[in-house]
Amino acid sequence: MTNELQLGKGSRYSITLLVFFGPYVLFQFPAAMVVRKLGPRVFLSSIVFAWGIVMICFGFARDWKTLIGLRMILGALEAGCFPSQYYLISSWYSRFDLHKRTSVFYLIGVVGSALGGVLGLLFSQMSGLANYKGWRWIFIMEGIITCLIGLLGFIFMVDFPETAYKSFKFLTEKECQFVVRRINRDRQDGEPEKFVLRSCSTIQAYSVGFYLPIILEKEIGFSVPVAQALSTPPYVAAMILMFFEGLLSDRVRLRAPFLVFNALIATTGISLMCWSIIPGVQYLGAILVTAGSSANLPAVMVYQANNIRGPWKRAFCSASMISFGGTGGVAGSLVFRAQDAPKYLAGIYACLTANGVIIGTTAILTAYFWVRNAQAEKGLYVIEKLAAFRYTL
Image (tube, rainbow, N blue to C red):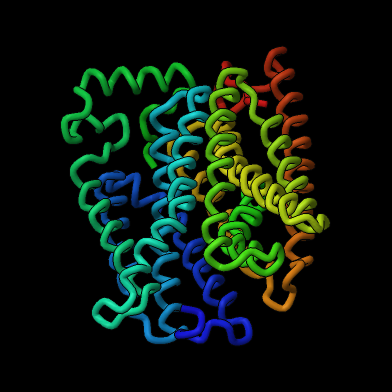
């Protein structure tokens, strides 16, 4: 693909990655309003189906400029997909049931990343069929699968709790009312009103996603097939860490310590990748940075969701967090530059800085929340317009 579409010239590869994030950030807030009005079943299923069509179009791209247009369309579609999915999840569960569910949600995405290399290897075997090269068949086949998932969503996806009884054979109206009452007991926002952490986490996550196979090949020295195969185990480690952190975090009802722990894991991994000369140790670093940065994505989202109230506020805060995540994606697509190979020091230093910001910001926010909780206990302050509400540390 790189040779056929001439992506290796200058900064074309980075530009192709970068253009995704403009529409991705721009359409976050409109999507938050639309999903609340249309409902997630119609909105998300339509987006996923359109997403699949765009993926199929990638398989027929003739030059790198076509990729830019398709990436921009993909950014606009994904802007409505992820924050709406997370908003839907957060509307169904109480605050201290949320981290493990969010971890499973992210885990599904990590499974996709882990299987990406395997599916790519499988579909690339179709090379030559209908005179299309293997990379084209990867996009075409994955696009077809995505379209099928979108169609299934129209049938099986569940709406927000107050209207979920209308979904296909899910809950009765009484059961939905029970869910709404449960949410109201937790934070009193089970029904709709009438009307920098995320960025730092995603700098590393996007960087790893974009460049891990390249780093495994060019810095650590694995062959292309081996590098592609070795891209999977780091995501398996991320899945394990993400899942068990979600369970433990909900059990102990704490968020900040896990954010700091993940940032420290990622920092250790980055250091091993950059400054070790032993391939096995460098690969261990790749596993650690993938696990730490991936596990922090749901942790950041839950930390945010636990400390706000109100459906509209929840929708717009989720959109804001994902938008800042988009800025992290912009940075992630730029800091690992081809001219910095094989060490990629600029990208390494950017990721180390991001981890430092995560640790510092988490410490400041946690101290602020602790002070406000203490004031609320004494009746000196009302948090989120609800006397019984307390910030989650």
